[in-house]
Image (cartoon, rainbow, N blue to C red; front, side, top):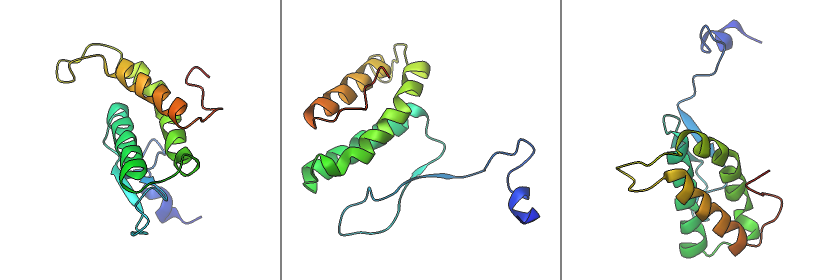
Length: 120
């Protein structure tokens, strides 16, 4: 590997990505890679995924099978949401982790998706 690749990673040897990619999450009419900002906290990432879920199922008519990758993305971020956003938030008007977890479980039931148990 080239030294120039590693020089971009910094002292802690971590990547300095600026974006999160959501492959194949865009509308069918646009093959552009969907990106999110890497500066989003986990609550924001979950919100973005829920918005994508709503758009793809409601507006674009995606089947339950087709949105499994979005649900898998939520499965990955939900433990962090529960860890970091489990207290009342004045701006939110509730406990974000509780509301997002309830919506996640609702989506799993709605789309009859197993194997993404929020307690696993």
